[in-house]
Image (tube, rainbow, N blue to C red; front, side, top):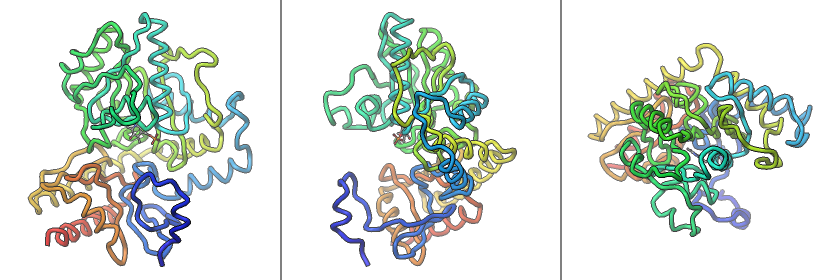
Length: 396
Ligand SMILES: *Cc1c(COP(=O)(O)O)cnc(C)c1O
């Protein structure tokens, strides 16, 4: 039984979607309208950090919905204070502005850096970003992104985002002029295919930006909230950026994002920044519940142990099939194949019976894995064994 076409056609066509309607989820599993279950190693694109419908999120939503949903961002509410205090306490940042999506948080980071440039750097406004980087789908964040072809989509771009090469300090240095106010990057380029910035590169960027009185902005929308085995990925490099954005995992599946900044950089004046839903207690209460699970003693050790297990399993598959290895940090990993099998594997995995498998191929020659942070070792092993069979099936 296929879903009704007229119903599907009422939605704007923005991507090619399989004719399935997902109806329920639990942990690492999601179920479609026909009752078929799928092992989910996408998790809403690294969003459901505790899996589908985790009790912590469900309970926080129910509890908060009965108390207060939205007093307006012009007034304080307790969950937003509680979450800001937690984020500030766990990071090098002093102030938090909550947003509803990663792109919106990044827009805020860009505005904050430009504001700081107006106040302290004679209107410097350029932000060096990176080829293949991804920062969102608003006009400014598309301009900041380095996806091939995006410079011509929806032209003209928002100016002021010269592009450097990841892990190439000279390419950054060559772009710096009087107008450059900041460097912005993902600690691990996610959409580009899980390409980590090296520790040395992050440290050198921090030194370079200090030397030139520029800000360092980390887009941790995908890498933040424990995804890489530390609460924030910049912590692996032992550096202190000036601005950080969070999204995806911070809400455990609900729309929540954050712009975090050090006190010296938190220079918005009244009226510069805001938004109808920003910091609403319904979403920030979920953020508090998610944060408390991630910050519980032992949780991150478990993430690192399971990341190690996944990494070793992917390496073994790579060796068995003559592929080119795997890479990543924590539970954001990629299997690098020797040919463009990605789309075919994603398709075959979803169509697998009796249970399907949800995988993602951000590039045709690689698969990206972003399971729930509390995925079990047994679920990882199931995924690996199914993937092995699927590779056999695809390669005949
Ligand atoms: C997903 C993502 C974004 C955009 O977040 P949205 O919530 O989709 O707007 C920005 N930056 C990075 C690194 C991302 O992975």
